[in-house]
Image (cartoon, rainbow, N blue to C red; front, side, top):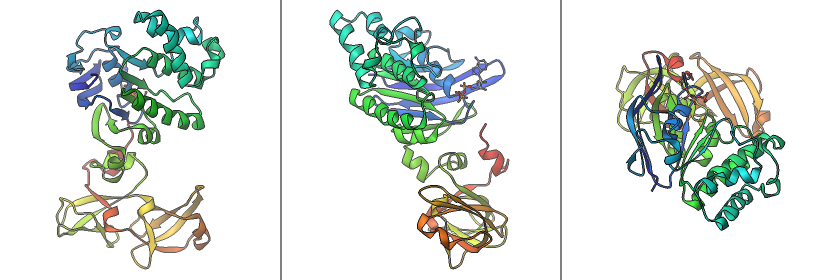
Length: 361
Ligand code: ATP
């Protein structure tokens, strides 16, 4: 059973700390994505699990067995690299047959298994072609079919959809998850694309600077992020800083820079504490009273209209309105903005400041 466990895993390249104190358990059959900004250590992490890199410290277990010193070919993982590495001198069918041959499957299986997975990624009609004759997206699908045909129950995918254009990427996302669930695979999928992570995963592990910031279901990470970095990274949000004036256990009242008092979810903070509030643009509404602001920008987004307003508190707030109400607003309109108490999450104001705390590096 390919449960994966990382215990206090770290990796250094000279002075660069690519991973630090990673503790992570991926359950058998779970689909987990590692999400985070470029350079945060996602590829390093998946390469250590694959056996391409040895951790500098800590230990990795697959199916309860320590992987210390175990080479990639003995780990029984299906691995799709960031830069697709198909054998250029082999046809599509031969590429996908590689696993079944190396695994010494029976003649029948060597015939049947590669065709089955090529059918699954809808490339059976391209089986005689060579990688140089395929598009980037087709190559990624072949790489995926090859990983699946290896029969490995643990699939490690490093940006497996990056070479595809938006439409195909969307289709293949759903297919990937469906295949993984149908076959009962354990999947670790690396991506920097949060929409991709939201749609395929049972659980997202968010990384920054070589560390795990937070891990949860896509819905919980979006609705109730524990960390300010998460609130800003997953989806879009407005961040406003202020000082707690009241906390009675049912809500937190916070005074913004212009003296306006706004309401937010209950929090562990008390009067005088410096905090940051996070409110998603779709949760902010123009009301009869509230935070005084002036509309500075109006953008048509297709399914909604995004307004950008400058508040008297000098905060910039974005809020969304239905397309049908687009004519109700003009540039320089004065509005009062507000939200329901539960839509506003409260975080401690980080000592390094909000900008630094949410920076993508
Ligand atoms: P991306 O999304 O851009 O692929 P990533 O999150 O996968 O980034 P990694 O490739 O794991 O990040 O890199 C993490 C850090 O380790 C980076 O600072 C990178 O420069 C460094 N690093 C990675 N591999 C090596 C290496 N072989 N030698 C030196 N530094 C490395």
